[in-house]
Length: 185
Image (cartoon, rainbow, N blue to C red; front, side, top):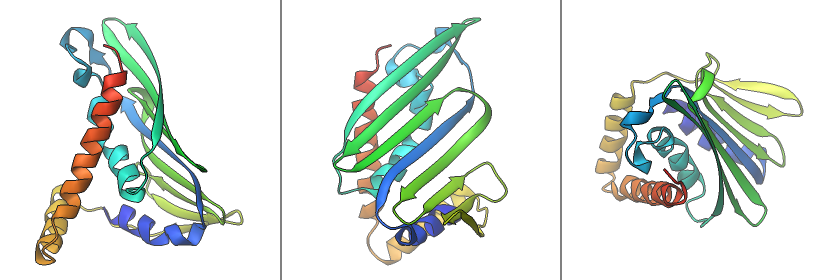
């Protein structure tokens, strides 16, 4: 995504990263009778996106993680709220998911020693840098996701290095299944 590419280029402007906060989800009740195994729970559909961001930004870190989950059943629909805390040394990452938000959320905030980078995926002005209480908006282009993936693949293929994406996908899947193993159906 154009916004994510620009965010990665601006990370150096916020100094040393102290913490990261990701919030994902929407109002999306799941029918209880359709949930047969852990991978059928709502979070499983949404978690690959923020996990890929965490693995991409911090690929060298092997984080420990802690999980907190709440569930509610209303009219035979499951509402799931999940928080996953990743931590290592002086860096903490909080990933929050809910299929019970009133408005959809796809937010990423990276807090550094010299400022913050904020991405709000469902807003017109999606990406901005905050330094000394000033917001600096970074212009982004909305790109069709499939065209974007094909473009990225073409670039990596020309560089003869498509292995990067495969490694990220494998690392993300591995972390997703580690989280799933801790969640009870």
